[in-house]
Figure: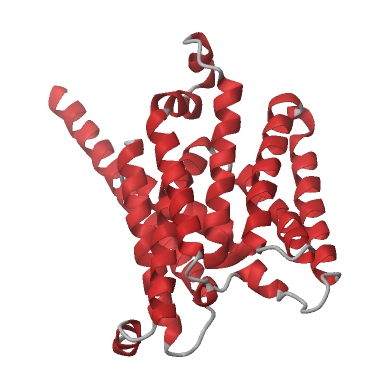
Length: 290
């Protein structure tokens, strides 16, 4: 741990790495909360894995992979959202098909990229240590966009997430805000790709928010705790992976998974104990009345 913080004060690439983790945690906490509460993790997974097609096309034509990831993510979100709204009977099959087709297109483009063959593994599993400093401004812009839209339309998103029928009765255009929510999830996926890659992005998107949901029921508090937890897990993963030279992305995900398992276990134990105490209190009250 001391080695990491000593190196952090000396090496600019590590400072960029920490900044990347913190910026990604903002989108992770805010949009991950919506994904967990709305229970659209499968849709988010379809969006995430469809992104490889856009990244592969960008590599093939000589552009930054992230510049191909953003339009591909937005297009996938709109298409998957449209399928969800209009073809619900075949939703699972169609989203699975889009998931597989997007990844297949990306692999083909990357395989045929002229000159240097891009490292597919870095896209699939992330390589946070190699994020260029210029990408930080791109991530800042995406975070500002997310926070601005979520703040401006918080009540509408709240209604759509918890009760679509009530939202329709209030005159809220549910379809529009549902698609907008998926587009914001797509933007968050692009933020997290550099941290943990396409394969693991769904875990970092959902696990911190799921842990926060064990302890709070306010959406705002859940977002705050999930953001802080995402930052702590990301930085801790970086620290633990630095010494033994482990891949940072999988290390972060293992920590997030362990945090979720421990939290779920503790919550379950306390819920059972509370239920036993409540049952015992009810029996004692019944005996007193008799």
